[in-house]
Image (cartoon, rainbow, N blue to C red; front, side):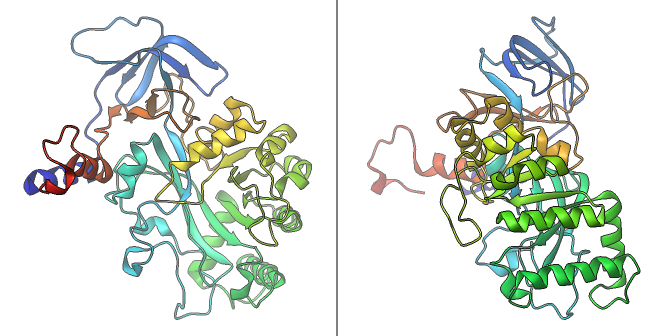
Length: 411
């Protein structure tokens, strides 16, 4: 029994095998493109990519067939901003690689790139993947510097280098993090202005190392800056900084973003938020409201969702569903956790169309309903085993038809 369990655990953490031709039939396909929702269609997958979408595609015995039975098929979803593959147990320091603190230097370190420590064999990956999620934005989490480091998009396909898109540099500007930067959010901006001036060569280097200057300059040219800000006043300051420095930016948190929706839309700055945030958590979020996402979408802002959790990243579906329940169009809420994050951060297009990477999910109901489940996840044209550490533990300790009460069962 123990040997069998070990083999299964190794299989769970292993990279997915080579892609073979696959045909999904009778799908209610949410393309997340201009084609919209296509009823009763087939999807032919060849060499890991979508080759054709049409009703009743001819096939042969050499092609594996999965009958979707009229159920929804969507792109594999975005798990939000997480530290998947960077954190096993948050209270066990050696298993956490997403931040630095008490470093031997007093410098800022934009060159601190969490992707260097990404572990695709983390138990978190298959647990999240079998819930219908195909990629995430790896983040450098809050440490003892305003500029916390960089990360980027990564696919949950089991690869060591499954990274996509632009580097994302994470910056803290909230009041709660100000205590580590001189006790005031003014200090955040003072230090950021100096760091950017040093990178531009306008000031002698005191906050950045040569590697830091190179990393910040690279991000300024080809990266995107993710600013943690909830308060409307802080968001406006972020927009001014983005404009002054001519950089690409995203606002993360954005609890009071609805107050400045027009300014965000005019600046073309997307937001990442949690649509479950409806009550003030602190003085930065007194204006929290359930229809934040709907108001932003109506104003023309690109909205993405994150639950704020890694080990429960599956809550992102509930977040999107809550946004839809409070006025955001269903298709827009689904786009916020499928195609928009990839587009914003420069990843592969997630819309389901010929030529696109075949990262798909077959659902047994509306993917934005908490009662729905992913019946089959397909990554790069390869059907997932739908096995994770959690399913193994479930099957081991909760047999369907035990002959004895649970207290008598042997592990």
